[in-house]
Image 1 (cartoon, rainbow, N blue to C red):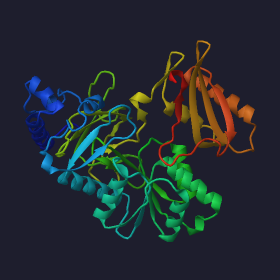
Image 2 (image 1 turned 45 degrees about the horizontal axis):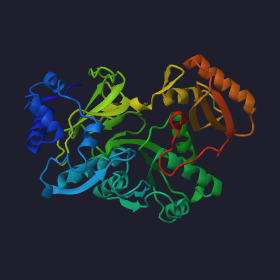
Image 3 (image 1 turned 135 degrees about the vertical axis):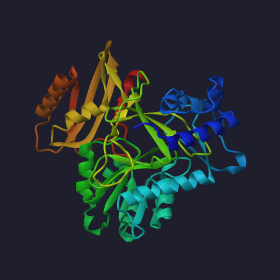
Amino acid sequence: MRINDEQLKLVNGRIEALISAGSFYGKKLSEAGITKVESAEDFEKLPFSEKNDLRDAYPLGLMTAPEEEIVRIHSSSGTTGLPVIIPYTKKDVEDWAIMFARCYEMAGITKKDRIHITPGYGLWTAGIGFQAGAERLGAMAVPMGPGNTDKQLQMMMDMKTTVLCSTSSYALLLAEEIEKRGIKDKIHLKKGVIGSERWGKKMRERIANELGIELYDIYGLTEIYGPGIGINCPGETGMHYWDDYIYIEIIDPKTGEVLPDGEYGEIVITTLVKEGAPLIRYRTHDLSRIIPGECKCGSKFPRLDVIMGRTDDMMKIKGVNVFPAQIEEILRDFPMLSSEYQIRISHVDGKDTLRIYVETDGTVDFAALAQKIAASVKSKIGFTPIVKVVEIGVLPRSEKKTKRVIDERYD
């Protein structure tokens, strides 16, 4: 699905603003003699923008609107070195709330719901995005923020909240705590809106079953507003995204070539109406595909498939390229395992070693199970890992994102 004429007009408006502001991307376009695009072919020749470009613009080099129109800044999480600062105008903030409210509506959430918000507030976009969307929808927001699980559960019971907003890691931790404390009959949750990290099918099923709720996968990143630019509809895994605000391409991460709908590659996003810090052809490093055809839910908004991982997730072990999602896929074949796992890579005596830690209950032979998992990894990926089986609950849980891959080779 290539960019249409209406979207091209919006892109040309952003090009004009970027050149006028003299931003890093405006300078790229000026140097290339580009002032507008006339066709999809022209658009696909535009240079990409990257996270390093954004870091180099620190602190306010991305600001494209006049400073007196900037009402807020946010900063991306998880970066090293200089952070990325994203300025927002009043319209940007309102547009983001509109998109987020659409996400809630797509999930069947109404103004009668009470929305329990656990992601962080402050420079991070998550908490305030979930709250602004709830307020735009007209639902009651319970702005808890992260941490203090005792208080989270108390408020969940007392306020009878019906929607949980969190990372998948914290949703699992809460589900386990609810089970442990025997308070499931006092919890009124019906739906979960989950974002911020990739999560597999096994984890999804555990959270849904243990909390007894419908789960919705919300997508977004700080550079492109924040969470709320896409969400799956009931019964489907594909995430509808709002193509009146953003345009998405899927590219081959090695060649930069635009791939046809249905093929997996790297998500590249262009903001169509963003004022404070518009981005054109921004490489997200997230891996997915555009699902071809129309959704049976009836929505005309296009769909992204589940996020498969990131281009920078790749681990090189003994000369083999491995993604965490491949390990997760293998572990799914062992129903006695919990959803939690941890990968540790070390370099000892001139050799790379991969250790996989998994959880199960006490009803299986740990040593025999470890051997079977190691053999499966060997047959499907090509090398034999060391597998350590531990009891459920031994691996760390997180109130934010769970770190599943620890590469000790560079410590």
